[in-house]
Amino acid sequence: MRKKLKTVTAILLSAALQYCSASSIFALTENKTFTITLDDKEINLNQPLTIEDGIPFIPFRNFMEEVGASVSWDENTKTITCTKDNKTIRVTIGASEINVNGKKVHIEFPAKITDGKTLVPLQVINEALGMVIHYDFDTKTIIINTLKSIVKETSFDITDGETVLITAKIHTNSELLKEKLSEKAYSVFDERKISQAEEFLNKKINDLDTSLYNLKKEAKAIFLENMENFNPYEFTLTYDADEFDNYLSIISTEMTYTGGAHPSTFKSVQTYDMETGLVTLDEVAKKLCGKDSETILKEAKELFKKEIKENPDNFYDDSEKLVEDLSSDNFYISKDGIVFFFNQYEIAPYSSGIIEVKIPFEK
Image (cartoon, rainbow, N blue to C red; front, side, top):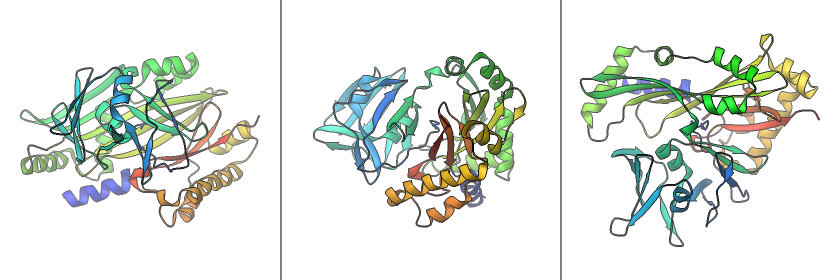
């Protein structure tokens, strides 16, 4: 059952955030210089991002102090400890896991010391602080948003006695979206979004082709195998939205963790005409870009192929061929263009995250 569940999870839920959320770290290359913003304010780093094997590393102490954390260093254990908002994060140089409030969290790439500074992969910021990270390749900006903007959260736990085996959450960025969207767009968003974690979990259970009983049974078995390092199965749904010219895209990011090295993240989108309801790519493309869906899909595919040619190590060997399967459903409206995306594992490995390109609106 355990092997089957993980296989089904990889097939159905393979997808990076930020939205973070799940979080979704895009592998970068040496020739790209990125600025970093946190909640729309630029972060001043005393050392630029370091790129190693396509993975961005960030000076940890510098970043944590910028976000208001207290920081200490233990020379004997080579461990840096940061405390912020009742959360304590311990990162040990060379270790494949970090410690967040006593809980061990696996990271793919360990922290290192360069020129006397502790560098950690951006994954740590996402895993430890719950911050949402995504990349704007047009402006070459790494955008980090904190979850302090999330003021509505529905969650519930499935337990075995006092042990939490499964947890499900719905994050709704209500305050952030009220500032970001017009009153009309927010009203549409509020009507459409899912409001119950139970509904979300039941859907995920069906997608995994199992039952809540079986999922709980497997989680308990894994817990009994390794009580000290057990992490509850987790199902998290985070909503974002954007609008332009009476169109609204509602973007949902599903994070699923059922054991293994890291969670799976999957992005899906629905786009609405705020007067008439759901719209297709063809309708949006003709109105905002003056092109039909076939033409704009072709342009998007060419942009993906360009990215693959520039950064072949970040993609599968047959990615250019896989790009041809770009779905007309995989788009959303941003403030200045139509964004197309591939989820994790569709054309690239996990470390490359959710990959996006943008077609600007017709001027």
